[in-house]
Length: 139
Image 1 (cartoon, rainbow, N blue to C red):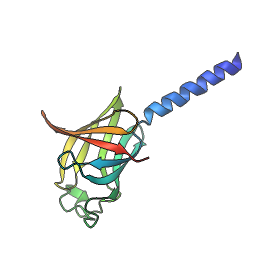
Image 2: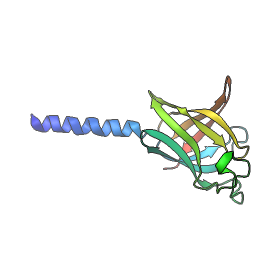
Image 3: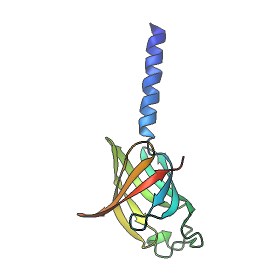
Image 4: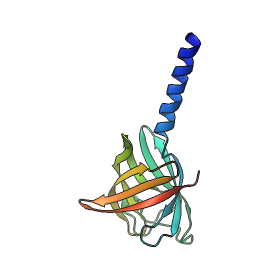
């Protein structure tokens, strides 16, 4: 009986951990207008919030610094830069954070939600206007 309770407890802990980490990992960003892969972004969890940093540039690997980024990010290297910040898991979605477009330097409110195991919907929005990209899991 105790063994069954322990197994059930471990199973529940594993299930909770797996559901909390469903967007954690590397994702290939795909431009919603051109369909081209632009970069690899690694999404990670820190202190209960989720962030995404550029891991690799695919489309324009020679553009190594962010010329149009706001504030302290201007002129900083793109690789390693957080472009998704402060996301919080709410049900099946992640929201409450922001996403930055390093090409334009614009910052948008953000929502993320997985669709299956290998697809992530990424929406940047300003008021009622939004764009949604579909990212593909790499690992």
